[in-house]
Image (tube, rainbow, N blue to C red; front, side, top):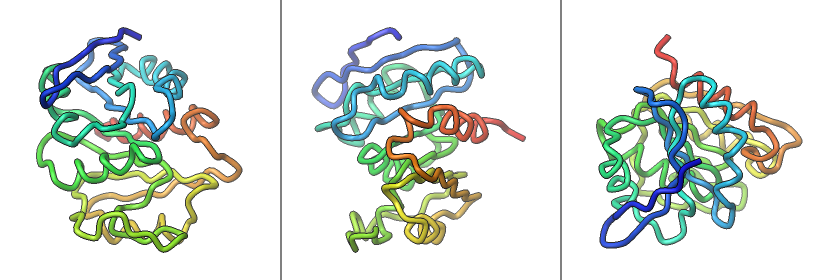
Length: 188
């Protein structure tokens, strides 16, 4: 993948841009502590499906405004949004609060921020509902009850895909994750 440094909200963001020059692009936000390499196998499959990928090197200290600035700098006005773990938190928030920039949301192992997780933690009670087609992919780290409860906060098509026995979905179930992303990018 090509490494690109993009000016974003008063600083620099490192992103990897790869894939065909397509009208469909996918923004990938990794989990905290995960290297962006976790998305390599997913990205390869997305490229084979004629999708361009933009992956942030890290979400540490990156604001929602900085993510939008990256998209502006890359001249991407309409993308599919994918976030894993802690990277799913800004993905949910951006999908809920930013009209007209995102075509779909794929969240991995993180319920809607207004839903209590298995530990009873509500991350953002003020997060509005998402009005985008949304897929929540869950493995071992998020229970089905919290995943299903997220459906109350999605005012569009909502799917939960459960992958039993998988801890790190982007690394250990790249084919399944890529399939869910491709399904959300298809207009049919």
